[in-house]
Image (cartoon, rainbow over the protein chains, first blue to last red):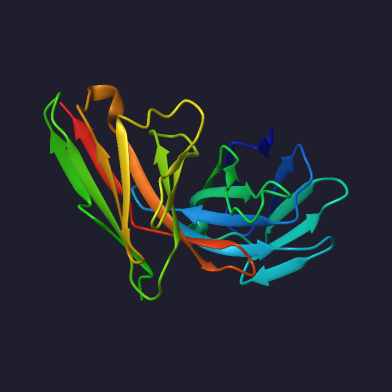
Length: 114
Length: 116
């Protein structure tokens, strides 16, 4: 059974600082996704990582994937208050016969303080 | 613009009644849609995979007779919570796969169900 672990679960940081959120998964997968959720809202797609060594950047966020280590990171550079949200990673179990089922991590609640 | 819509966005119902939630794919036809449930301050849990023209596939521990899914057309899936109880109060979110090549899912805005 695929398990996805994120850490930290809670992150409070100051504006301007850098930090990294980690996402580990337990079995082989070739697809990893990062989503953002604001309070009371649904999920917004941030990144899709499909291969070992994939790196994607959007603004102050950068995501990477190491399939051998079964690890993805979401790096935050020079945080701003607008980045405050809950961030989820999600993984598609490998060889699901074409299914796109997602298994989610527990989420990291990020609070950026002025 | 929005890719997936849900209706209603919020619903309050009394214990024992049934509630229907609609999920619509706005831009394209979706043979597969997914239904998730999210309890407060928790992650999303997949409830079932909705397949157009066939029965839904339910995840382990999800009662198919309680959570009825009907994928009536290529743009509409409905989730009916039958005989709702307070413990069914949750945020229900549907999703569709926008780009099959990547498997990336787009999520609806969610439906907040409160059972009193």
